[in-house]
Length: 442
Image: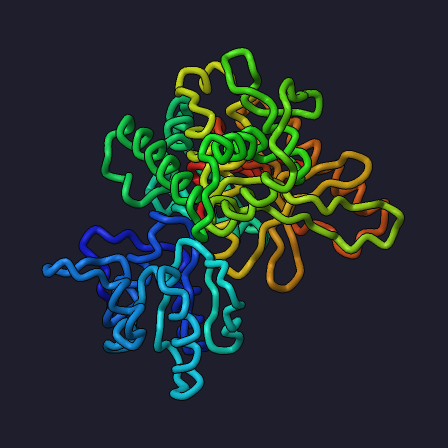
């Protein structure tokens, strides 16, 4: 079974897709353009229909389906309908067909944007399962050996693996290239140019989404603000204020609380609309806050941690080069954190876990919390340099002690420092794991 083209690389999300096809009549694979949704869907399909294709006679499939929606739905099942959102009424047509002709695993839909129709689409609850897809992790692209399993760490497994000499330049290259399947066979310079071209294309698409004209230069200001707040707790108000901060060699790439605008920002409502559009194009993928069920008066923060869907997009938006990132490890550290959190999210999801972040009113922070399906959870700190492993481990131990003192409903079952420039994976004497990101896998 499967129509995936030659060269398809297996994805960790495949099992989740298979599970959903056994339980639902249809699955909607959603995620940014070019992340691999179509090939994933083809790999699980027996027939397909591509909305965006034009036949040899110049006939546009979109126009055909707009006249007769059934054309897109004909074929051996599981049947893939690629980019269904181009003809939004397809959603209700598929949902209605599943009502009239119940069955499991009949349709696979893919979509790279969420339409905002004049009337609400039926949710599809019970018939169509939504499945969010991200770009490739380092393990999926072959840039991590995967010798150390995240699930094994959470479950208390041993880790003692030599990993070779780390290289900062190589990590920067991986972050700038991103997890885009179509880029994997390209030389490094071409990968970077491809990501920049991709971002230009998405911003142009955002400027016309829903048939509403939005000024591209203002959209770029919002995208750059999101990029400069990568891996930072930032609400819409902060993004709004940051649109007043210009770009330039003397302006910090990553913002902090002290950075202030020196020109009027875009209006709040405009920025809120732009962020909504970028969300519906799946250009963002934010990390929610974790609540450890404290029974004390400790106030746990609820703000999301901002991420573009791939850290390569933040670098492209900031228009920063490799040499500057290598010479500015503080700035690159935020982007490295974003790459690690992308991978942790993908690995966790492959075994039913979820990723969060933690921050409370005392300023105690944890970069990543991985919560297992049974409610157990692990705390992860992300550090670029091996010289910061001690700091990361100390923060995790202090965090666990704080949870215990303040009556957390549960304590972390594992503590781990994910590092960029460590040469081996091991467990410290204090029980904290240390794992290079290029050795981590699901």
